Image (tube, rainbow, N blue to C red; front, side, top):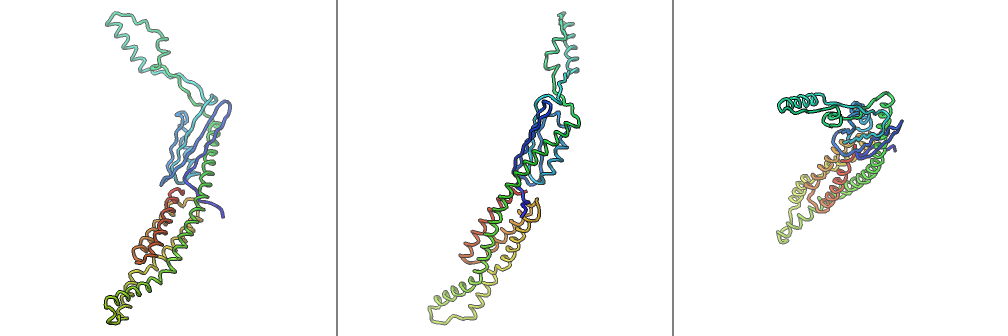
Length: 296
């Protein structure tokens, strides 16, 4: 069988180098109800943010994805001198006013400003071209392919565990269904014994009255519908795992319905043995619920 199910947890990275330029892309994904993508990259590359998001969305349909992009080297980078002309002009204006009012000579020169970080800053500027964009796309895809592979491998382990647990639930349901008919007979014998004890064996217990009481109990404690729905949910759960890749939300809904039926069985079936079955049933359902939270 082809494994389609994926975990929402994964990691992938890609490092590409060309002409003295190094580009590294890291991708991490976690559990999340929806698809949320956060990208952290140098501001020189922000013009590629939307392109990167579209690539990520091709690989991830559900989960929180954090992308980290770092660069080093030269290549497509060049240094550019940035001057804050407004601040510089205001500084010169104030200097002139001070000199005029105090009769002091400022003796300002170009050097006084060139090495002052408030006025002059050296920034790296990206000079992108089609070759660089292609390099960026390749690095992003490779990182996402690694992340997807890890999510698929973990999804394979999750699927194996879920199939084992859902089979255990099916076995418990089968045991409850096989045992349930005896509950009525056990209740009838208990009721008959209590009546006889109450009458101190002076009178015979009214068989018709006993049958009526047992029938009322049987109607209140009947769990056939709940067992049938629970079996249907099990079948639907297995079918959903085989249907496609993005199944986490649907599986979560089915598990909630299974838990609802288990609670109803526990409240209706007035029997110690069935109560024990229900405790075991709910324990397995809870474990499945925890696992389902990590499925895409």
